[in-house]
Length: 551
Image 1 (cartoon, rainbow, N blue to C red):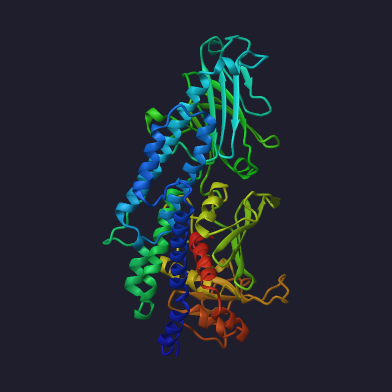
Image 2: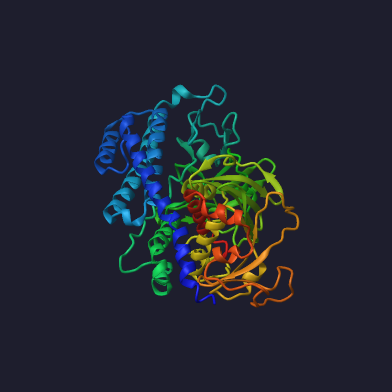
């Protein structure tokens, strides 16, 4: 019977899924509007998408000399903004709208801006050191200078008096300091600590340009398996998977960058992270340094006596040599997830809860925006700077990853995490149809998803009723293979797994038609009137977290 109505159900699903290309069209209009706003602003900043304007901007700044550190910091805000815009262009623009030459152009612009900004900070530091005698501290007689900004904090110390008793340095009104050996205390040296709130060390990872001959595994499966009525979604599936691929290359997990530049010796330092994101230090953390001459990679040798005081949030360690230092969190510390739930809050508004070993992360989604609702760290409420800030999905994902809340697998994550691997096409179809229903239906993790094979997914679902008691919700268990949906006879509390069909229920070709069998007319009407941007944003977040494979 379900085979007889299959074409009819797929036809109806196709009509519902027209919301995805509509949302992409609105995104394109937003990008065009943004370009127009930049054009009419006339603020002197270049359009990052236009190579000629970027080249002119970079050339003019290269020619400018004798800039103070404060002037470079001010200029860095424009530069970092341009880098951010270029990254978002690469991430948000559909692959079909990005030519290979444009991708290369944007990557080169990002790299040039990064290198020039670093060079400018080095030159400005040298200019500052020329004034060392005029900036000498009255007590020690040595130069001490701190310049602080939202993105950069500079600590500079110059050994003017060469007093062997002054081996320990602590910059005033900070917890930043270091200790040097006696031989350096009597030498002509200067130490710079450059703490940046962005990654100024790691080289830009190039985005591999998509080949026309080689599509992603998801797209290949779409071409092989999906019937004519579903072919309209192939292009969108390809775009979503490729954007995830690009995102995995461009987003960096590093946050704390401390750079010291001078001689080869052992130096002892202590530093306290200034922002309120305590997660990074409270979770598993490694201190790493980079040996630039040996290759562009981080290493752990040459670092000793590492200690961390949680109450003071103070990190202390010894180095064999001066060089860049960073704290890096395990990118997969929050994977696999222990459970998840997607629940409607209001019209076109949902709450996504992802529970991991260490954290419980709640994300609100409405229209084309996402917001971090709350974070619990080891069952304790944690205050994050991101809470309450609405962002579009891609900037939101970047912000969460930079804050140490990484619940977004990349294409390499399965090498580092034991996962419940599902066929990509089945996952994609499930997420798309869950997003279509999310304005009215709640979805949740099921333990039986682990026991069914890779060609099927199992999850809980129920119609969300505002007046319903949420302590003991009446969940239904659905199994979905991408082409067939069924309601299972077993419950979440059952002792053994079975694919037996629940009595008085039928097989269907889509989740939409499956839930329609037990849902109210009002619920289905809400589904049909859902905002296209909202549905697209929910789908983007489900594809990004891959809940069905990583739980």
